[in-house]
Every structure is written in C-alpha cells, then in structure tokens.
Amino acid sequence: MSTRTLLSPLALARPRGRAVYWTVFSGVVVLFALAFLFPVYWMVTGAMKSPDEVTRTPPTLVPDHWHLSGYTDAWDLMDLPTHLWNTVVQATGAWLLQLVFCTAAAYALSKLKPAFGKLILGGILATLMVPAQALVVPKYLTAADLPVLHTSLLNSPLGIWLPAVANAFNLYLLKRFFDQIPRDVLEAAEIDGAGRLRTLWSIVLPMSRPVLGVVSIFALVAVWQDFLWPLMVFSDTDKQPISVALVQLSQNIQLTVLIAAMVIASIPMVVMFLLFQRHIIAGISAGSTKG
Amino acid sequence: MKTASKPPAALPPAAVGVPEVPRSAGRRTGGPWRRRLADQSRAYAFLIGGLLCFALFSWYPAIRAVVIAFQKYTPGSGGEWVGTANFTRVFHDPEFTAAWRNTLTFTLLALLIGFAVPFVMALVLNELRHAKAFFRVVVYLPVMIPPVVSALLWKWFYDPGAGLANETLRFLHLPTSNWSNGADTALVSLVIVATWANLGGTVLIYLAALQSIPGELYEAAELDGANILQRVRHVTIPQTRFIILMLMLLQIIATMQVFTEPFVITGGGPEDKTVTVLYLIYKYAFLYNDFGGACALSVMLLVLLGAFSALYLRLTRSEGDDA
Image (cartoon, rainbow over all chains, first blue to last red; front, side, top):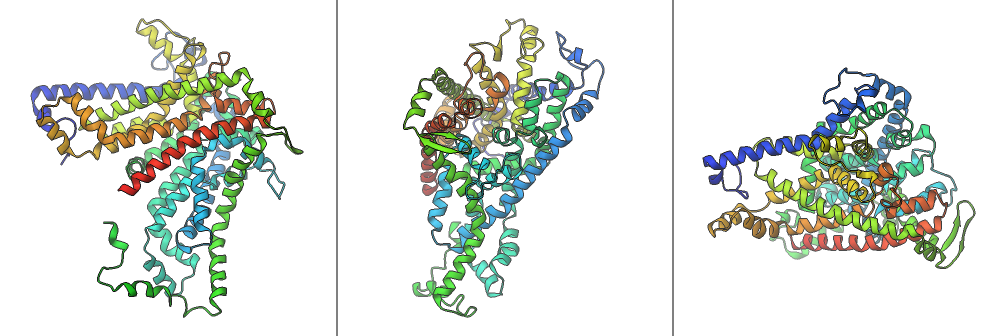
C-alpha cells in the first residue's frame, strides 16, 4: 500500500508514464552513484595505485596493479594504531560519561523536583542558543587552567570527556523522554522499597532504550567527527585523535599513503552507519518532524 | 493520544491530589523539613555531575568570552582591562572585513545550493517507488565520512595536476578551473565540499516532511487542473514551509561557523579569500596569542548567531505548542 504523492498512480501506470518513470529512475541511480559512491570508490582504489599511477593524467579508472602497500604503509608510517586507539578512548569515554551524567541529571530534572530546577533547565537550554564553536577560545582557556583546581585538561582525554557531558541537546532529549514516563510507575517502585538509583536503573533505563540508543549514536559520532576542539586540546602528536593527526601529517606524506589513511579513518563510522542504518535514518527522519 | 497520563475524568477533583500527601509519610521518619532536605540532597546528587560540566564548559566560558573581550589576557598571569581596545584593533585588521565577507558569502552560497539541491533531490526521491532504502543509505554516506576526510578528499580532487575535478572537465572537453586555488573560485569550491558532505541529512529530513503531506491535497489540485510544477508550488512548498524555514536557520547557524574546510583545503588562501570568522578567531588565539582579540571576535559571532538561534528556538517552540 502506498500513499498518494506528487504524481498520481494513474499517470505512472500509463505506458508513457512508465517510460518516463524508468528513465528518471535510471538517471537518479547514475547520478547518485557518480556523486556519492564514485568519490568513495576513487578514494579506496586510489590508495591501491602506485605513487606514479595516482598522479598520472589521464587517470586510470581501475588500478593497473592492486597494491596493499598504501594501507600497510599508512598503518605503520602514520602510526594509525595509536591515533585510532586515542579516538576510541576519547569517543568511548565521552559516550559513557554522557550516558551517566546526562541521564542522571535529566532524571533529576524530570522526576526529582530539585530546587531551582526550572532555572537550571533554562540555563541548559540557553546553551543551545550559544553556538558551540563560537566559544572554543574561552572554553580552551578554561580547560587549560581549571578554576579552583588549577589543573590543565590539555593533552588528556578528560579534555574531550568533560566538555562532552555539557551536551544540552542530548540532555534535553533524555529529559523529554523521562517526562513521558508516568509518575505512577515510579511511585509503585518506590512503594515496593526501591531507592531513587534503583528506580532509575531497573525501571527508567530499561524503558528508555530507544532514546539511549539515539543519544549513544549522537555522542559517538560527535566525538569521532570533531576537529577544531581536539585540534586545540591535543598539541602532543601521540595523543591526537585520527582526525587531527590526518591533517597534521598530510603535509609531508606520500599521496597514496595519505589516501589509505583517510580510508582507514572512515571505516569505523561507515561500518557503524551500515550496521545501524535503519535506526539512524529513522531517527533523523522522526526527530525532524516531531521537532 | 496524549491524554493517557491524565487522571480519569470520572474521579472527583478532590481525589486527584490526595495520593501525593501520604506517599512517603509511612516510610520515613523526621520532620517535613528534614525530609525535604534529604530529598533535595538526593536530587542534587543526581544532578551535580552534569551541572558541574555545564558550569565549567558552557556557562563559565560564555561569561569569560565577554570579560576577556575587554581585557589584555595572558594565560597564566590573568588579564588587565583595556576597554574597547580589542574591538578597535580587530576592526582595523584588514582580514576582519575579508573574514566577515567570506563567511557571509559562504553562508549565502551554501544556502542557495544547500537548500535547492536537497529539496529537488527529496522531491524526486519521494516519487521513486523502487530501491528506496538504497537511495537513503547512499545519500547519507558522505555525512558519516569524517569531515576532515571529506576535506582532504576534495583537496585531492581539486589538485590542479591530476585532480579528479579537472580530469573530468578535460574528459568532457570543457575548460579546466583553478578550483580551490583560484581567487574567484576558492570559496565556491569550499561550498561544494560542504554541500556534498552535509546534504544527506537535509534530504532525509525533507523526505520525512514530504511523506507527511496528505495525498488528498495532490488529488484535489490535480482535479483543479494543476500540472506538476503548479502542484509543487501550491501544495508541496506551502505544506513543508515550516521545515524549510527551520532547516534554513539551522544551516545558517552551522555554516556561519565553518572552519574545517578552509583550514584543511585552502589554509585561508589564496590571499585572504577563504578566511572565515572562526578561522580568524583561531588565528588570533593560536597564531597571534591575542586572546582578547579572539574573544572580541567570538562575542560578535555569538551575538549574531545567538539571534538566529533564538529565532529558531522560538519558531520550534510555538510550533510545538500548536500541535
């Protein structure tokens, strides 16, 4: 069963309509393949060409000889295991801390009626209006010399983890989800003798699986894709995540090796996307229309 | 649908509030004041971690940006007040005008291309009855490629020697271009990269909006003799107007903060043709060690983008209330 769209099913059923439809359909397939898949193909195969072949004009569509040395060289020369590991550590930590602290805070704001709760929520929502990038410099100065403690988070994963917790969007998503959980459910748990933490852990969180999934994906993708903030935080090369390292090393490295490193840097997120594509696409589509 | 959590209407009004009072009375000892304190400290135990992070990395930096904008600031030794000297110095920097001009041009071009292309794509995709999942995955694929990789990839495409862009033009017997290396073409080249990398999300959102248009509207328009273009103009666009406006505002906010593409692809060049405001902020802080100037620029960007964000939140709020 399909709903009526711009074109009527009748028009599409006519021979002329069918001919036009299949022409447009093939056109779109070719266009999408050229615009979105071909650049990726070019990158993956470019890394397998020899250094001479990759700069040849006119270029070869298929490598003359398939070399894997670009990939192995990138792995060794650009120290990719270190940078990939750094990225994994930074992304995982930011994700876990966000889950713990944003969930707890959202639960408190939604169900525990803290004093000044309205004011705090207002302050958190106000940060949605302040574009994150415009504040990177004072944020950097704060991370470089924390007030009261006078320690520096620079060159430490904490410099990624702690600012990641201040994510108003994710916190608000969680709070709105918790708001929809009826009070009766929580009160029933309380009467049964469950404490606040127990209620959160065994009642609220299991009910919140969908929103926790969305928040997790947002949190992981955000850290993996970020560039400006880790560029500021990590001046030590061996602490840098893959995005920063790629740019820093791109100047003095052979083209095929750089391209191979770019492919390797893309694999984790692309694989995650292909695994969870249904959820990710549904999440984007649903989130937009519900506002 | 939304009334599920409301109490049943048959219940007398007085009974609704009653369960609140004896809820915890049976379980805890101590006066109501002590009990409230215990409740509050428990609530704040849950809140404190998130609260501290927001205080440190959102609220404090926002205040600090405004303060340092009026200071000569040296990391380690603090700041001294200099009045509006940072603003005047930044104003007189020739790169200041260039950065704002480039950022606004970039935003405008990204809006023209970044609005029209995904909208038309979504319109066409919505009419296709086959391989729907394939199109959605393919169009979103570039969004999942790290922005740094997209930027480096296009830098290679734009290479004047063996870059794919010029090779394609040669293959089609068209004149080649300097792309990101040419003074006139550099900014447009960056807009193409940003559009390629980001339009997947926009297409998916438009697609969802198009699917919510009731089919009867199209049928009625068709009965009135409206052709395809007229149906797009009088049915599709009015029905998706709100989403279009939202995405436009979000895109303005996002593209005004463009940094990765100019930093990775052009380094702000040729000359100052692709220096953006955020790039200039970065330069002031990390190249000139002028944190006062960087914060003065940040405050300007903040005010402008804050206005757009406020408009966005206002529009989404009022729409939410209507629903």
